[in-house]
Image (cartoon, rainbow, N blue to C red):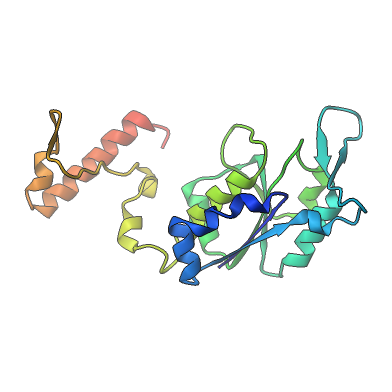
Length: 218
C-alpha cells in the first residue's frame, strides 16, 4: 500500500515514521508513506498558500492552486483522495478496514481557517476523526495512517487483530499480567484454569458487559 500525505508541516511526521508499528511496516515494505509539502506547488513568488476569504470573516483560507497542484502531481488513476476535515464522515474501525483494502490513498491536511470549498471537486471523500477542531490535519493523518497500515497483511499478527475493540461491535476483553494480586486487586481465577473453552466464554461475556456499560451505542 502507498499512503501520500499532503501537509504544510512535513517535519511533524519525522518521529511518527520512525517508531513502533509504522516503522516496522515500512521496513517490511508492507506499506510506504510519502510526505509532500504542498507549499512546494504554490505558483506565488513567495510560495503563499492562503489568503483572505471572500465575503469577509476571520482567519485565512487555504488556496486551491497549491493543493490541487500537489494532488495532480502525486496521484494516479488508482489513488483515493481523502480530505481531512471536521465536516467529514466520522472515522471508525470499519472505515479503517475499508481503506486497508485500497492500494493507494492520499490524505490532505488542512490548516488555518480551512479549505476553499471548491476543493471538494478534487477529492473522493472527507473524513473526520471526531467532533472537535484541531489546528491542522497532521494528527488526523497519523491516526488514520496507523489505523490502516496495522491491518495490512504481514503487518501485525492476525491473532492480535481478531480480538481488538470494535470487532463485532464489541470492545476488547480485559487483559491481565503479573502479579496475580496487586494491592488486593486479583486476576480472575478462570484465566488461571487452563480451560480455554471457559476462558473464551468468560472473555466474550466480559466484552458484552464492558460494551453495554461503556459504549452502549455500539
